[in-house]
Image (cartoon, rainbow, N blue to C red; front, side, top):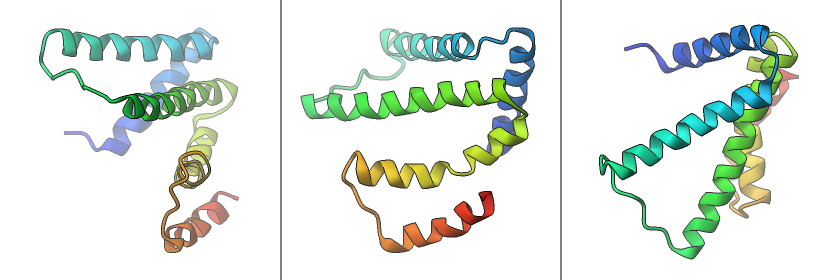
Length: 127
């Protein structure tokens, strides 16, 4: 089984090759998200996995998470279209930092101060 990091890298390289042929990152990213959505709907319709039963609060939370995840996916594809794959990897290295900031500011869920301190070397390394 290939390592997750290897699959992640291959995903980026293949997307970059596609963007070299068709420089339309929002279209490509939207198609990928659409295919993923159809896949999930098919799994639910065929009863391979049960359809989640969400409360109103659960739907609100999932909507926020889905929005940020989809935005991150689309912006990753845009960054691949704007420059080399290595630049995208540098930007993606800051994901833990942005996850911590979004968790605190958007979801009002603060982490242990040691978590924030552990992000200092990451931010400095990317800088």
